[in-house]
Image (cartoon, rainbow, N blue to C red; front, side, top):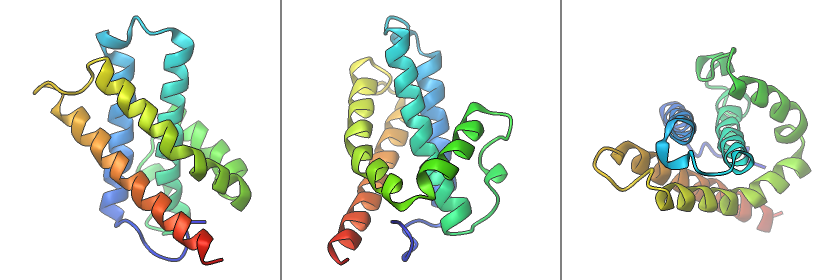
Amino acid sequence: MIKDKRLFSKEEIQGLVESCQRTVTSFISSDATISVRYNRMERIVHTVMSIECAFAYMYAEIYKYGKITEIINPDSDAYARYTLAASLVFSESSAMEKFLGKMPLAWNKIAAFARDVGLSGSKKEQTVDNDLDKISRAIQIICCHYLSGKNNS
């Protein structure tokens, strides 16, 4: 589980949560994703929100940087998802391990899809590229830390 070492500063986690939020907004509001079946888009958005919640859990519960409401609006779908995930997944080590094990592949598929449908790549969408890269690097760091801790157990 992610406990011992602070992998990210308070500002970095805040930035990661904001990147996830912008990514969700990009998927929802892009003309490029309109042709994608609703069920697939809903799964993509929910997966990004789950990753956002993992960063938020690190912020509020593991590193104790502040309250969850400082980084996720309590009236949002992400907050409702966070509440559920925090109690059922992130607080239970075996469920968290399963989540962390699936996170890299799930994220890689989402990032590839975003690039395939044209959410990134243009000058206008430089922010999307930056967000995708930032989240990808953070997931790598988390998973490397998780795997090294698991191997030392």
